[in-house]
Image (spheres, helix red, strand yellow):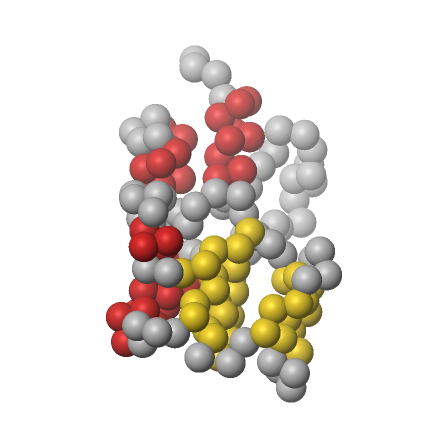
Length: 141
């Protein structure tokens, strides 16, 4: 049985771990678009305050956690899902088949129609990439 999980946030991580616990022989593929290990968005303010480093936001501290669980992690964007064919197509054109699919992609921040919201230096505070951009601009004082 091949389980594919779209999203590697808290829901995707817990799903992968739970599937592994209940089905030791299942093939598990977790797909996330970001270039970092699964992390907690709720930890980003602590990162920005300097209370933790970037690794402190990671959901699982051991870099080999998913490899040890035999969960394949793929960094990619998914362009389409074909439920009838039980396949999805990644942004690079690669096809991935599945027996079971879980979509755990979370949410996106709302950007209200405020004048100037698209100006340089105005950032959402939602991803590690956002935190990196804010940190690069933030100065003491």
